[in-house]
Image (cartoon, rainbow, N blue to C red; front, side, top):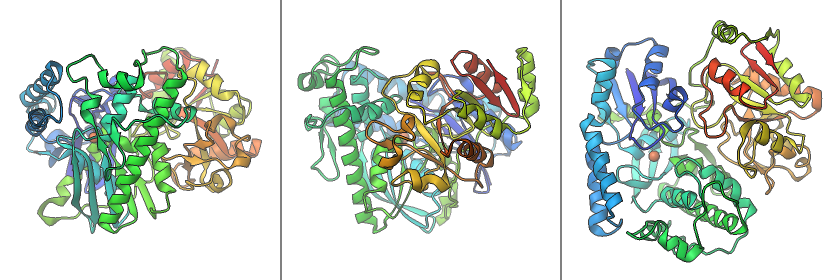
Length: 558
Ligand SMILES: [Fe+2]
């Protein structure tokens, strides 16, 4: 069976993947190809890339599976929320809901767009419940026979939080908390209140949180004593008055974008992150109680909160944990594409996902052709890993472009900017010269899996940078530029069998410095999508303060 999975909701992170006989073949987010960050448009480029990679035509597909129900249920749920007063019916809310409905309805929820772009197909068009698609994306790639599966995001058609019991290749629904009682909505509203982009910049709030102090009361907005939590949505919504009216009453004025960060903003970030962690722990605890299973799978945008994930993993009530690395809506394509396997009492395939390299790759010929096009001086490297390690040991900031692009928000050694984590100034250097991003956002380490125990108190198996761990106190001064202010790090443990080239780079760096750890951040400039093609990489390299670019087998230096 050949299935195409699609995320398309006009909300954010459109994506596509292709699955052959239950095995994921290829996946890519539309933003990487279109270069529009969090692109919410119909993912025609991503679908084309899937078909090209798998070398199939649209008419050969058995099913095209969308990770959302049709527009009707979304609209009906919104109307119900307005009618019952759970969401205030403002002019803007009502207009948005109506426009979204008519736009999706007109496009037959993406099916019409698909046939317009790719011609007629006999493939069945399937619209999968959004949280079921998230749940499959966690459970069916976990490798666990049995799991308590938790999905938390901004919203599905009607869901905000769901619990599932995964066993024997099936997913039984256990609990559903409807939108707008949503931890994702709570977090994204505060993200906007703090002057950042909602559904995009939640990382910034998480990174800012450790600079704040405890004590701020957010109980008007979220009840953490209710089991498992209760979001007071009406307090978060403008309620027909000025934006953030209630929030301003309790917390003071909202922060203007790009303005100074003061102590109050830090304290709000602290309180929001703390509330999110308590709510997530509470939901996971409930999932374990209700399913009787201590293996936990997480998905949904809230599960990108690596700090909370780290706390769950070390809470003592979880045995094994798998967080779908593409936890946000890009990942529902992965789940939707497997949904047909549940038909007729069928079972999901279940294979542990051990890496994120599901995207496009470029041959050395394609790379060299791009280098020639731009008339660049370059040299061919006999051993790119060792040359890169040498440059890093000299303190150079490096662009690293190799192999298949990562699926999900993190660069994991295919499209990465690398640097020496031992230099306490490196964080500021990379921030100022390359990433041009906020001073408080931490950088993450990639380390040999064999060295994880030596450097970290937990997270010995963390291939996706999706949970934080405490750096051992005696190692914090050894890798200061990847240790956050609270002693935490968001590690990627790199296995030799999974990514031999990247593992060897770190190994070679370790041989030269005694520290088998490197700083790894995504290969992009602030506000841009991670680079996709050699041209994207070259353009980004020359638009920044990077010193060298190792791209395929080639080295470009400034
Ligand atoms: Fe979602």
